[in-house]
Amino acid sequence: LTTNFSSCSDEVAYAFIGKLDEFKNTQHYVAALLERGVRVLIYVGTYDWICNWVGNERWTLAMEWSGQDEFSRQQLKPWGTEETNSRIGLTRSAMGLTFATIEGAGHMAPYDKPKESLELVKRWLGDGFF
Image (cartoon, rainbow, N blue to C red; front, top):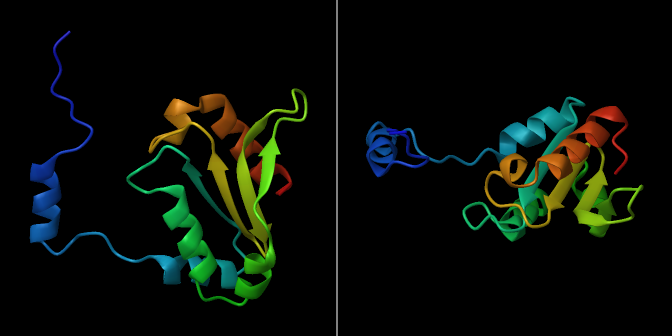
C-alpha cells in the first residue's frame, strides 16, 4: 500500500501563516460560550507534548469569565470507570466548564485511548458527572 498521507506538513503550515491564518488565542470565545450557558469540555491526553495538559489546565484556570473563581477553587480529582474502579485521568469542573485529562493518550486522545475517550464524552454529554 502506497500512500501520500502526512499528519503534519510544514508546507501547509507556512501557507496558513503566510496568509496570517495562524494560531490564535480562543479563550474569549470559550468564555463567551460559558457566559451564554453553553457547557464546555476541554480534554487532553497526558502524553500530548504539542498541546500539553499543564498548559491547557493553566489557560482554563486563567480564563476570565463569571465562573472563574468557582472553577479555580475546584481541586483536580481522579475520574475513572466505576465497574473496574480504575483511574482514567484527572478532572476539574464547575459552572459549565469541565477540564479532563486522559492518562496515556497523546495529541489524538480518541485514537490512542478510544474506550476512555468515549467514556469521557458519554458521561459529559449524559449528566456532566464531573
